[in-house]
Image (tube, rainbow, N blue to C red):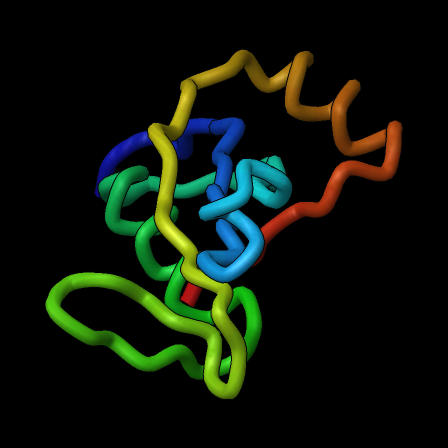
Length: 96
């Protein structure tokens, strides 16, 4: 078993209807800890952020909307930084 590591992850959300007009894209950040592959963890968060999503040609769609979700790159952080961020109320994602 590998040593537990700490990360800052991000998800990118786009509303395709509004995005065409340049109005709606945002990201949400979260912290997590894992002893497994961090990118796999972030990808799983993208698949479950709004409940179950639909996949179409590699794109994750929120059902009944124009919103797509993609996973960003996880950034490894120190445990002290993880604890500081956690105390600010940033969402902590739990592993599956």
